[in-house]
Length: 357
Image (cartoon, rainbow, N blue to C red; front, top):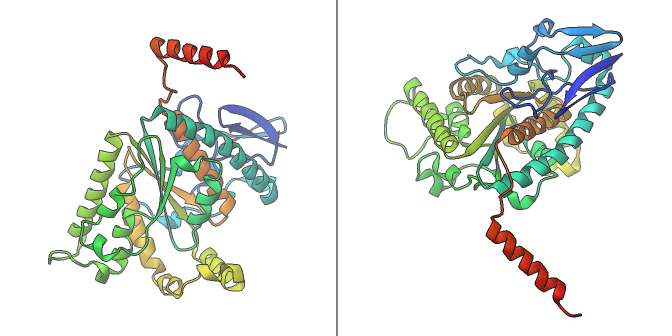
């Protein structure tokens, strides 16, 4: 049995190890699979149509593809989104090992294509790309950055991991410290956690809201912060920054598993913090504030993507696929050389060729 998979700018038919990856909508003809999709809402996978032609299964439902990307104004309920690896019969029939193998192949393909896309992004010097990664502790943000961006030129990629704000940062507006980390034109910038922490962590722990004028910290206060974030992102987009936002969605059981793995592995002990256990106690509250933030800040220009992350290879492949697709969809071109410059280059060539010795 074969699964028909439409790859990045090409269509291929392979054995059932093919992995339908989800891509962002609104992409041109060069873009990624139009029928990807292994991440759907729980109990809603029947809407994925599998058309059988001979021994081939072809997953073609584009509505499913769009579920990864949040629609503006849609109330998010994270419990409705799966965190796993296979959510249709075709993938289950192929088997986890085969699907994982194909996912890794796709990730490698995206490494090469992302490297080429980054070179063009850098040369054109028109757009900047800002990638935002959010998720619960152990969701895989560090590993996603390491594996997805491993093929890009480090000169054109900047990573900022934002920790607890300093005293100086607390003396400014909550967006101030993020301004300083924004990518320049031609660059890819990655925020490992971001300004969204200021509507997440401090909403769970309001006592951490300091140096602010007195007043209530109710719905009006938080809605104003969502408005500030949306306005901030609109400003960046209007000035040439492409924003890609990913929420790495893991289950509570998977987080427990990963925390225990850190405790069992001496080489991972440095990553463990007792605060991880304390924050885990607020799991349900964090789910609520994430739902609010995702709902209020997913816009047409900068939508959120909910990435299933219980299996790291799924999350990494999906994130790489979406980033590559988006950069490829931009109107980019290498700089043109004027006639006068070409004449000067020819003269330079002549001098070099006439050198003695």
